[in-house]
Image 1 (cartoon, protein in one colour):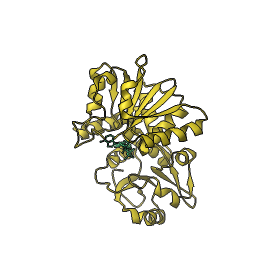
Image 2: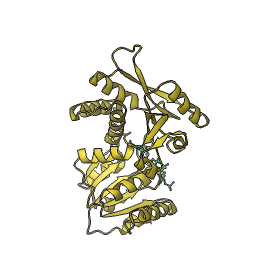
Image 3: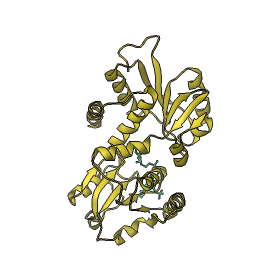
Image 4: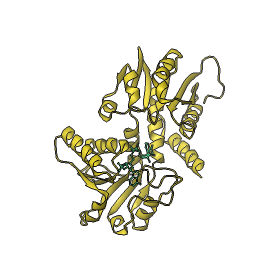
Length: 290
Ligand code: NAP
């Protein structure tokens, strides 16, 4: 938030339901203050049935840009003036940028994850990847990995049909047999001559269910080179603890959250957020988890 709200302050915000838990105001208001920009970021609780009215209202009110979170990321698309190619392919929009005649939708979640991985020196290109889970985020992650040169992508899910649907869609998109689908129990059959980049996209282990893990068997964790859990609360999930105990590197989803926010902020304000400021905001976010 700018130091003082005045007649020239532009409004940014996030629409979701629920939205009360969001960390986005902390990210954006700190960025605005540090960069001396006269913008203010607010949470908006928007029910499903009010979504299209909210988009039109935001346009009428001159709101500069919005983030969109659960459950509106797909539904919001029909109210947009334009959509970025990546967001269209993913089928989910988390950022609205004001353009002539309406809002243009972007997806900054996947570029955010990619930027977080780059920052953590995790290489996607050439990696053998395991995705745990096959929900909305897993689908987007599979697309990001396929587009960024992963050597192989194996999706393991409790409901195997959902993993299969993602694999078929991605293979058709990249025109090769890159993505394979399995049931969770098939994790015991992984090729033990390889080390994997594992992306944990299920809800299992998320606060308040902090003592759970989607797959317990220690033998699996011996194969994990890097484990990325998209959950960030708790700060260290059981999945991350198991990766570490077996000698791998593990990360939570907080940096993905940070960078999806930073990319949105850069789109709205036409600025480049310097690395030092990104790290400063990250430290504040970490503190807020404790
Ligand atoms: P989703 O569509 O609801 O998918 C949930 C996935 O979790 C499904 O694969 C589901 O399996 C699996 N699952 C749930 N409970 C399970 C259980 N008890 N045992 C085994 N598998 C179980 O959710 P999503 O939108 O993809 O989000 C997934 C995660 O990403 C959430 O934890 C969310 O917090 C996180 N996320 C993080 C960020 C970030 O910035 N860090 C951004 C977005 C999302 P079935 O298919 O069998 O039901």
